[in-house]
Every structure is written in C-alpha cells, then in structure tokens.
Length: 368
Image 1 (cartoon, one colour):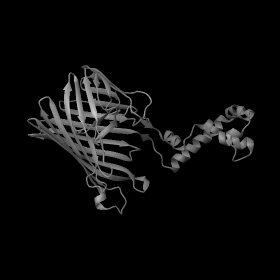
Image 2 (cartoon, helix red, strand yellow):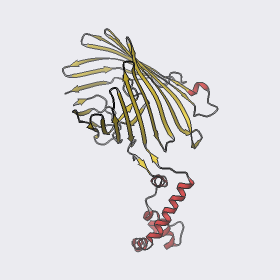
Image 3 (cartoon, helix red, strand yellow):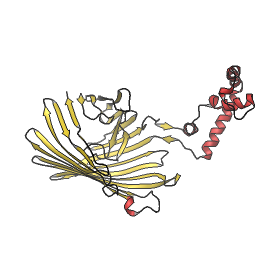
Image 4 (cartoon, helix red, strand yellow):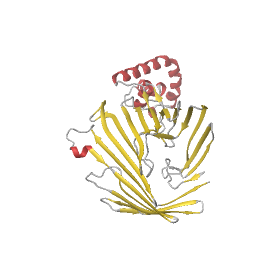
C-alpha cells in the first residue's frame, strides 16, 4: 500500500497494489474537492501467455515521461482519470520490443459510437416515443405552442395507447429523420481514442513511436521518441505532430502544431539535476497571428542536494511558455527527509507573475 500526498485522481492519496507473474492490479482511492465522496480508480492485468498481456482500467501510456512532476508530456494515449476506461493489449514477441494497442473511453464516454448514436446525442434525442410527444400535443390541442404540461390527465394517459397503435409509423419516421440528419451533417461513426505505441530498447538506447486518433479521426496525434544516455546524463527527446478542427472552419481538419519535448537528468555526487524543455510551433491559427505568438517555449529545472539525512531542493521555471507577454515563473525551494517509514517533503511554492502568490505545501508518503 502507498499513501501519497497529492489528493488527485492522477496521484491518488491511497493506493493498494498487488502483482504476480501472471496477474496483478491496483486500486486508487481519491477524495478531490469536486467530489462529495471518495472515488476509486483501478486497473487490472493478466498474461494469458508470456508474450501477451491484457490490461484494463484507469491508466495512460507515454513515449517518454519527465521525472520532475511525472505528468507533463503530451505523448500520451489514454487517461488515468477515474472516469476513464482503457483497454490495452501488449505484445512482447522478442526481448526489448513491446507493441501496445489501446482504446480509451476518455472521461466516461463510450469506446465506439455508430453514426446513429452520434446523431442522437447531437440532437439530444430521447428516442422516438419521447420525441413524438411534441407532435402528439400539437395533434390533440391544435396548437403549435402548447406543451405536454398543457394536456389533461386523460390526454396524457391516452398517449401510451396512441403510440402503440402508431408505433411502426412513428419509429420509421424517426429513423428517416436520423438518416437525413446524418447525411446532411456528414456524420460518421466515432471513436473516443484508439492508439498504438511501440518501444524498442537495446544498447544504443530506446526508440519509440506512437499514433492515436479520436473525434472521427479528425484529431490525430503521432510522434517518435528516443531515450538514451551520455555519461553523466540520461535524456530523451519526443517529437509530436497534431491535427485538429481547422481554425474558423470546424468541418475541416488541419495540421495543428508541432511539439518537441526534451528532458535530461544527471547525478554528480550529492547533487542531482533534472531539466525539462518543451517547444511548440502552432500552425492552425488566424492568418494575422504574429510569428512570436505561434511559438511556445518552456523550461523547468529541479536541483536536489543531499546533506546527511536531509535533501534540499529547488524547482524553478515555467513549463508552458517563457516568451508570452504574460510572463510567469515558479520558484519552489524545499527540503525532504524521513521520519521512520514516512517520507516528508516541505516547500515554499512561489508564483511570480502579475499577481504574486505563494503557498507552503507539505507532503507525506508512507509505504507498507
């Protein structure tokens, strides 16, 4: 069992894990401020054969992940939100190579929807019986502005009999309406997210590649990564491309942006350092957008220095954009130490921007 400090679904305060050679699982309990009760995240996995693994639950996979706060990369497939359901199939045919195929429900939606289901959702339809009530009201009252509330109890009670008598015609008309709506709005079957990722590691390092699609394959994400080491540094680079709905024309798809993520870390004696540098160039913007506004460059660094039983640290930077006109920067000095089995981290978290603010977060982690 692990008790963490961050009370969020992606960093649950209480986690129970069990793992064996053929199966395992995790249960995460979270009580965030937006919920009235404790919510549970989970995932389970099993191996029918040694080279094949099945996993289902709340989790995500990445090309490479920074190790400062463990969440900043956009090279993800799936989501670790407790409302998300993911199914991942992993194949490991040879040593060092893994291939993942994954489908994600993305915050509680369905994995797949046919075109009719998409149309029903867009129309906010409750089905032929409920939708026909407006026509029934107009028929029995002779008024185009009357509502169900204007009917007498006898008229309301007679609706079930009327619907049963004309059900075939009503359902046929309802389906024709859906078909016309699908044709007029060019609606296709939808997928929440479908993705593929591979990693191959050997003496030269690890190369990775990914592809994911959602929103009727109009929103695509694809990329590649490399992780390696050059003494005394270990590092990775992710290069990603994105498509999205075209600016000012949502019916079309356009190339949205290029994102490059670079990370490096090193340890020299008592000092360890970690650096995170994301860069974005946006193409799917208004034609009048200035060149400087198409670019985003971030930088985040963390230094840890161990003195006896204590580790002093400093985390600073801006992980989204250093060159924006609304400049902001995090400055977070702190200390880590152990009290028995409990690891304690205390820090002063300062945000320097238009409105200066600071907080004093204290975290605890206990493992059994």
